Length: 197
Image 1 (tube, helix red, strand yellow):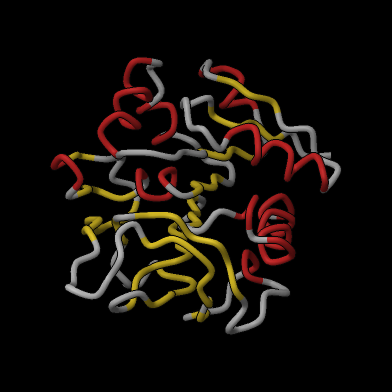
Image 2 (tube, rainbow, N blue to C red):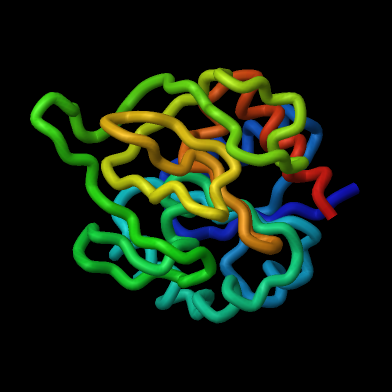
């Protein structure tokens, strides 16, 4: 049985992510201490809100270098995914630097920001994290900043242009959408993540 830890980064979606995992039979522990996070078989970095406060919470808890040094599967969700990147335009925030690229705010006269609602996923390369998720499957997004599409993109979505919806580099993975609010697609992604070695 995997031992899953949710990093207690103060994100408002922590409870709903934990409940989504419980529905899959996984009782994830909430932790903000380095030893518990390092000892887990799988680590999830949730988050809702802005990049600067998100990074500040990790710094205050002494977890920036802890997260950077993890070798087990890690999944960043929503803001948690964004924090895996090098930089966010949001308050000009340096992030964890685990995935190359900078988050940029959605722009365009006709675009509503934040991007909020259901949007389709288009896989860009095969990966176990996307097993059983069909091309064109819908997931639920809420975000104002978008990660670029690049070599670490597993699936993209489109809102005024393409952006990364699912990413992976080494043992670090990210989902821009909310798996806990994305019905069967979100449950499948979480199930796939827990199955990663």
